[in-house]
Length: 403
Image (tube, rainbow, N blue to C red; front, side, top):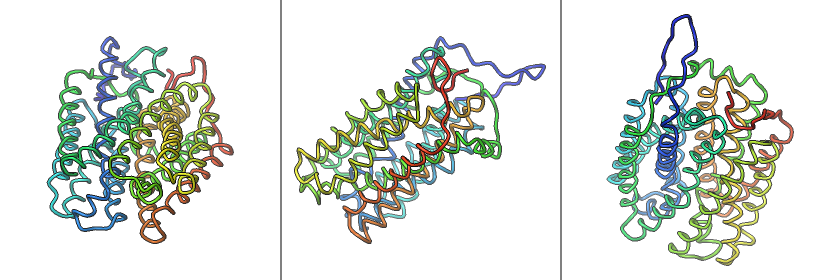
């Protein structure tokens, strides 16, 4: 997807023409939708997966931990090496991983399959995170970034609920087969629609780590770590939580996840506009909504109607996390966007892994509803970090990654 080009006289490589930008943005949005759907499928399938593979729910949740951890490790290493051909190879790895998950006869095989999914999604997401602003004119960069990250929110709207429904209708393995088919579509779209863009600046892994000396970037990454860990400590186990608190069945859970996802799409675009003006204020609002909603679920989610209201608020809050934190990171490192994006994706996916792991330990050791208290406490940590840390100040026009 990226191509390093050296020009005579040491001049920086120039971006490819932008006339193909919006089809490329659409391909990236489809890519983020696919990788997030692939990563998150276990959320809606946790109970039948664990039963089929002969492991408790907390152990089954490790399938999310494994994928997130591998993606976190692979993303910073893969960004400097990526070309469009390599991106297609990584999407193919994602497809193979989903096929392996669909076939897995035991938990060990499932682990191997989810490692492959993690490698594929780490590379795809890392590049998509920083590329949108280069595919379109500067005045449209904010819209393009929100569109790419809408793939994450739409994955909650369509991917996870659809996987849950399909798993209930045809078995949980069918959901992974469907994700593999979607990955094949992304493979074709990436090959046909993405232009050859040179890397703006080649930064080795060690150089990317040195970017964290900037307190603005460091604060943004810490906010990502707290917010995402807290969210996934609770959200990974949302199915058993809803079953325990609200007493709802599989069909209603699918509806509640759909409600959550629709709200998440709205939250994505609302937060994208707000973060371009003030990422700190936007993230303070997001953190407050998330902390209160997650903490309230065990006490106020006793009926499907109240649970639906809480899922709407949860979706509105978390739907804006990706685009808001990504905006913060790109504003904090405008001259090293790809390297900063690789750190962002690494921290984000490490937080997914840590959240799923922490939630699993709490669910198995204390009780499944206790994961909401854990999640709310971690989100509160994000609020403190956002308020106390240094934030980047957008320049006019207020768009992420402005050149």
